[in-house]
Length: 217
Image (cartoon, rainbow, N blue to C red):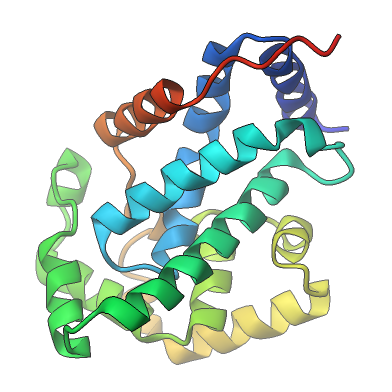
């Protein structure tokens, strides 16, 4: 077992014994990853934060059901993706905005407060994000997992419940859909930043909504 997975297991045991504050360690560890993956499904920033909070709360409420057969991160991502798909169905029914209006809204709400992000050429950054947004969901999520979040093939395969071969095929297809020149301009991890202020806000909000677990050990 990897050191990181073992650490997750130890933290989970402490949470299950009633130390709910330790759950913040898991939230802080996976915030960036969940945010980037959620961006593959949802455009609106406020919706993304809501989905992340719902994901953490649902995971907490079912934490005793996590048996460690898969990585905790993969289990969490599967919950996140399910929440994203449910929210998309809901938004598709309720939204009266046109696709163009939604794209404009998404760009206007993008977080450019990170000092490192400000150093990028804003027009090129928006163009690249726009091209990623235009990818079909299947390929966009794979691209975000593998190239932005740097998840390996096994983790991606486990999270999406598809074969490793399928992961590779979809990633290659996603790359073909993007302009090579843009991909070589900026490191992908500088896009889709989930800054520390927002990280703390999500952690605080989740901790306020959950109750300590009764000790099981």
